[in-house]
Amino acid sequence: MRCLLLVDLQNDFLPGGALPVPEGEAVIPLINRLQPHFDLVVATQDWHPPNHGSFAANHPGRRVGDVIDLDGLPQVLWPVHCVQFTWGAEFAPSLDTERIAHVVRKGTDPRIDSYSGFFDNGRRRSTGLAEFLRQQGVNELYVAGLATDYCVRATALDAAHLGFDTRLVMDACRGVNLQPGDVERALDDMARAGVRLMQSRQILSDGTHVSDVGP
Ligand code: VGL
Ligand code: ZN
Image 1 (cartoon, rainbow, N blue to C red):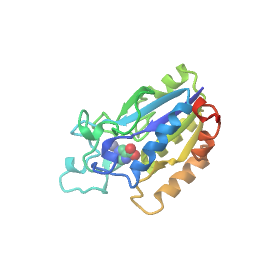
Image 2 (image 1 turned 180 degrees about the vertical axis):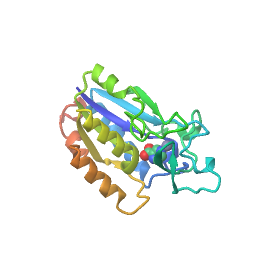
Image 3 (image 1 turned 90 degrees about the vertical axis):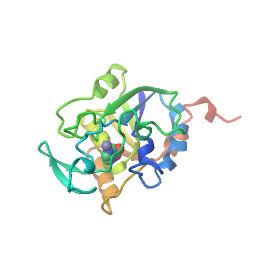
Image 4 (image 1 turned 45 degrees about the horizontal axis):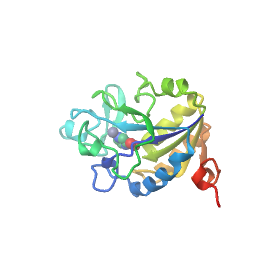
């Protein structure tokens, strides 16, 4: 059972959003083309309450990019983004959502962030995603989305550690690069954890979907 896991394809991570990922919009048409090649499509959604501890605005005197201690964990401070039930938290309108069978909402606890779709950053709580995927019989997990150096990285690392045969579809991801080289380092981290780094053409040319079969 082959699953495509779409990470945080939300308005706030796209141009015009609160925390735009450079070229983030470029992955959406590609992801729409990838979806029919999978048995199952699952998505994560960053889903913060307005008082979330990752927002610089909730820490007077602190600025975006500062790193603070949040309940015992280092936390990068971000602009207010992906607030529950707002436009910024919605999936991009250009994303084909019809095939998404299950959505995992994360980052809901104001005291802790959750980059991974599987656990919060302190691994204190599971989101239930691993249990859902196992129930569905998923063994191969393909990860794509935003941002390569934060939520994609954390999700792929957890997936590999949980024993899923995990691949990163590199050209279907974009990163923030808050520090130059962050994306490269994230790719290294994933590869070292056993995540296979690949390109979308390896999926699009596999002939598993009827529309790819020529005349
Ligand atoms: C993300 C920063 C803050 C992400 C989410 O989706 O990569 N990055 N919240
Ligand atoms: Zn967030």
